[in-house]
Length: 309
Length: 294
Image (cartoon, rainbow over the protein chains, first blue to last red):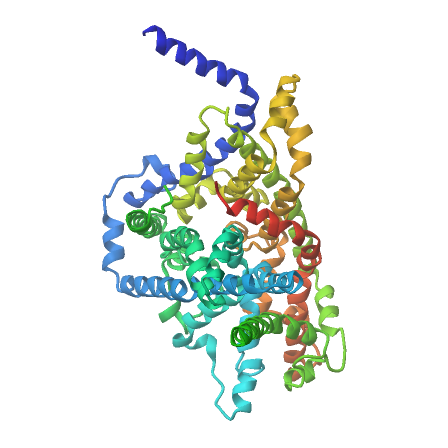
């Protein structure tokens, strides 16, 4: 070891020693991540094994891609993929642009008080639990007592049993999601909008731009980096359609359009105890998500120079 | 000039009208549930209630508070929320403070190890087996420990420590002989009340609303949080026990069932909506601080 590297490493040791209490502080947090995040990642190997409880994860015999093959060949594979992707894409198409539009609108309000009121109102549903949210969906869409069907019959239509009708499932899921989250998701765009240099607006005004043109040519380009970052993040979770809400909205009648990968993992794994098979399905899901994230991130960096890493 | 003025005005009208419509759409279902919860179930069913309560009665609330399981769930949820949030808060500070320090050697490695878990995870089954092996099934720890900290909140907090608190202040303290932990307790935390308020709001709402981990880890009804009972009543429509059996006519049972649902939605969210106005002034600020990175 030559002198300079020795010097360097002793400087490093000194820096570590000086902040020893910071390492002590972060120790429990790192322990948490290792135990509850990285150990399950290690445990994912049961997807390639026939898990036998008495032998544990490491002791169970390897079986290669058996469980993956079973999943790909099963008759519900295409249904699961179609539903998961369908809901994910539908949600991205509707749920992604709405908060941007809302933020641009709120940003046009000149009265601070009105602006705060609109924000308070639109954020509120975010705090409802998924159970209450789905409960309200059931209440409002009930064929006998729901207010929506009340309106339909008032207009002399025939009541629709929304929750048992597969054709309605995705729209209800996405629509209620927009209702609940649009305000909350708009916060980040509002923050980005306040960061836009007022001089740009001044210059545009001098050039005779109308307010509409200023939104289109100043505000929107100003938040493009934020939009792209969030788009990348959203694309990365395209297949991780939330278990929580779908599971609650699911019933045997709407299964043909509500059966998604994560509910399937829950049914086969936790309920039926087919651990290895469900872990394989879950792993497939994670890998597709991660791959999508990497691809979109690379694309964004090429096109726009914005990326997550 | 005149024309431009008019188009400006038209634009303002358009913006206000659209936002008013959005507010009505968002608020209406909530107002309706509130009105329906204090109206007689009879008039709700006949569709007479659409904004103002009719024939005010508290039968729904009465039935809710009569039910011992709801009360058990409520108590459990309060305990889980308080204990869980306290642990979340300590863990978040313990991660965010070192990561916010430029002189903390290896902070990029630590941060990378945390951030990676946002994009890739072992999934439901390996996590379940881990919790099972640790012997936490059917205990409140299964709901609290596996979610002891959120990466996203650590990042928000770290950004606040970095940008919201002058680094010179911390350096001055260290020159005066204050240890790192002393700096954290005496200088950083007292200046971080806005972000701590935001964290309390985020984490406690998360615990209050959680049902997924309870669904997979708990089988013992005495330990159920409120949300699991809500699920049975609101979604699965199981409330025979609440209505009791006896000489009630069937129609009456159905009606009271509806009243219970509306009352439950209100009761379940009451604490959050009571807390919301107090924390609201902090959270918009706190979220924005976290949102603008670098």
